[in-house]
Image (tube, rainbow, N blue to C red; front, side, top):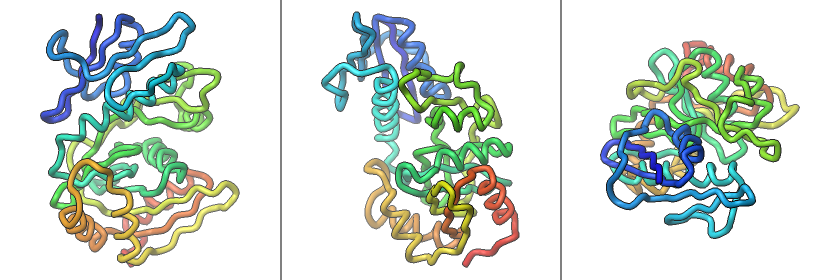
Length: 276
C-alpha cells in the first residue's frame, strides 16, 4: 500500500491506496501541505481503482457507490480540507475566495456559482498572490490567512487564465472542471494580511459590470451566512467579522468578464474608492 499525508498545524490526514498512480493524483490536491509519513495509524481515507476504471472510496463521509476519477478527487478534496481545518478552532473559516493586493486582502464572498474562483484567478493573473478560492481563514485580529489548495475551475476558464488543461489535475472528457496549481503563477499569500475590501459577487453572463457600495449591516449578515462549521462560531465569529466589516471597503459586484472586474476592484482597492 502507498500513502500520502497532509499536515496543517496540528492536523494530519492520510490517504492510502494500492495504486501508486492514484496516490500521485491525490498528492497533487494539497501540494503545500504534503508531509512524508510512510507508516503510522490507519489511514483516514482509502481509494481503490476497480476493473472497470471507476473508484471506490473508504472513510468517514465518503460516497457509498463507485464514482469517476473527477468525483473521487472532489470527494477527497472536500473531506481532506475539512479534516485539516477541524483543529483550527481559533479562526473564523469563511466560504470565500480572495487575493493579496499590496499587502491587503481582497475577499470575494458569494454562494457556489457566484464566480468566486474566476475572480480570484483573474486577480492571480494580475500577479497577486492567492488567499484561496473556497476557504479563507480570518484570525481574531481581522487578518486573512491563505488556505493553500488547488483551484477548481471550468476548463474553458482555465485556458483563458493561461493554464494548459491537458496538464491539469482531473482532466477528463466528461468533466467540465479541472484543478489548477497557483504555484505556476504568483503562488499563495505567505503571511496574514488585513482585509482591505469585501466583494459580494454575482456572476451574470451578459450583465456587464456593476459596482456599488454595500451597507455594513448587510455585509455583516452576508459574511455570517458564509461561516463554515469548523472554526470560531457564534458570538466569537460575530465579533471578528464585525471588526472586519467596519474597516473594509464593502462592495456589491455584478460581473460577466472576470478580468475586467478584477482590474476595477484592484484600482478601487488601491485608493480610487473609499469605504461607504
